[in-house]
Image 1 (cartoon, rainbow, N blue to C red):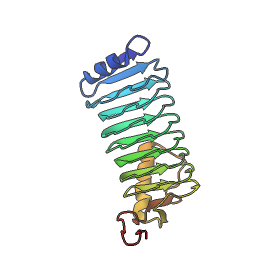
Image 2 (cartoon, rainbow, N blue to C red):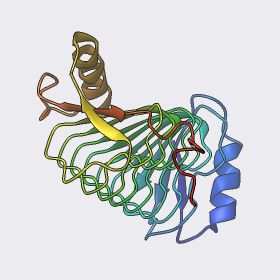
Image 3 (cartoon, helix red, strand yellow):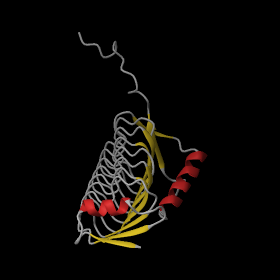
Length: 225
């Protein structure tokens, strides 16, 4: 295992060292102390452990690595994730998984506002609560919230499906609750297995999806005289 210390190396030096590792390698980042932009833009299939709390954009633009953060993270963890996994064994700040096209983001604690904003195909799994406007303008992919969801969940939702195990404060524009099917239950079971969550009953979640009323603008209906 390669060990990289934030106390000794700059962020650029750490990311450059990670990018040079061969597929299958394992690296450990020590003393992160809230450092931003760690493990970003990586395309090699390696395993990375971040030992402590980290800052903004951890694992952003990732296309291959599996990253685990043993602590909390700041804004936009896993932003524009393409493939691979980012796992946070703590809480996450705003915009977790923003615009993720693929891959899986797992947050074992709570996520703040706008988790999964503009999701484009990725998977966002949150063990605890999610803040307001989570799933805002989410276009594709899936979200699972193991706790409660804040106000305006799924505002301007497109084709992303959001499963919520707890309470929903309110739904955003064009989001609606739909009947849970057998396929949904199977999907949630698979998501639970992927995340390693053990507190969610897959048969007792709420399915939130788009009502598809914002797809087209009706010029006559909205005409002003």
